Amino acid sequence: MGTAFLPGSFDPVHLGHLDVITQAAELFGDVVVAAMYNPGKPGGMFTVEERCELLRACTSHLGGVRVEACTGLVIDAVQTVGADFIVKGLRTAGDFEFELQMALTNQSVTGVRTVFLPTSAPFSFVSSRFIREIALYGGAVAHLVPAPVAQRLATKVASGSNGS
Image (cartoon, rainbow, N blue to C red):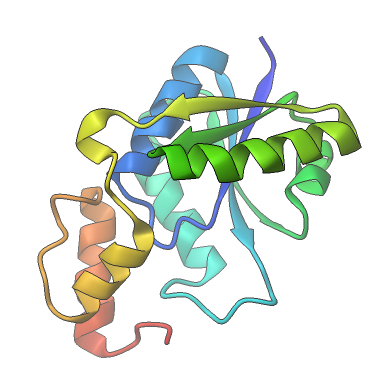
């Protein structure tokens, strides 16, 4: 069916992300998960290298999934890795409105189509931003993230190196 390109910040990767990555692997068989880095944005909790390491740990059980770090425009990264489709996960109608505009723009520039995959209901509210905030204030997030991420979050918060 072709290679799917699944971009995101993944700061940190959570169970909603993993749900969409799993769906994409089942549908496409060949998936590039791209930890995107925007040098114009302030630093996140995890470096792009740490995010890639966590993504690899969380997707190692999935065949056909590889992780890359990418900068710049998604459409340029898609062409660099030779992907045929962009995959985006959707949680809400708000996500759809934003992602549809981006998908149509990307297709007009490159001809690459975007496939939308709805996040499974139990993960439809999960957000990296909320996970970071809850973790920084000592709240429980282990039920929202894969085990390697929960461990790394706990270590990072305990050491005071939270990226902010």
